[in-house]
Image (tube, rainbow over all chains, first blue to last red; front, side, top):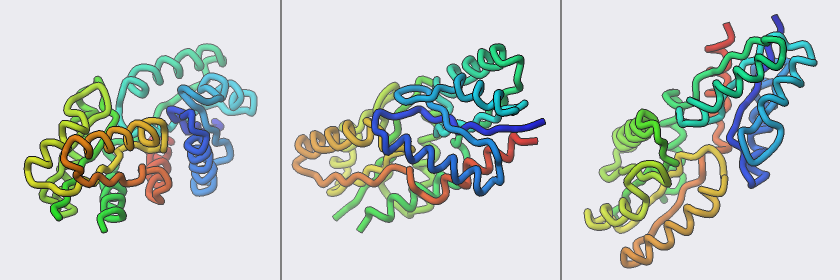
Length: 122
Length: 122
């Protein structure tokens, strides 16, 4: 089984925001030692998730792990993402697509908010 | 100067997502030792930012720190938020409203994505 990873973000009309997601994906590949890591966007920027799943399947991936770069379980992650993943799996010969939980609930989030509060507090 | 903090999130139609933001704000108050911490939402759920700024001003806050619970500098944080903050300041006797940076760029984010990738990898 050859696993590929997709950092799946909302996408922004502000290109610097999309670049930040791409930089995170590159860092994920580096730190995780993952060979196949791509970025896909829900909206506002290409490429979309189905396109990227197809590209990774062509590169030999037999399993896709989608990592939502979303804070909360909103309608995008709760409704849109499973639907898109199921469609992509059907199109690409039933390739296995697993979806990681959103970032919400991770213990490190509160540390980020605390840092942001303190940075601007003075 | 009495500073109050507002965790400002997008808001979701999924109430569990909004509850998660409220829990984070409570944790921020506890961990940061902050007396006045509230939550406000851009969309999909009350209360809105202006309402919360007014409520905190009534409680004696003379300065508001808005902490965006947004990952990236999208249009909400780059455009909507400064406009809303400026309007609220004008309405509430020129109360000072400072906006912290979004979470993007914080070193802890990559750790969260790595954890999410590893949790589902096996």
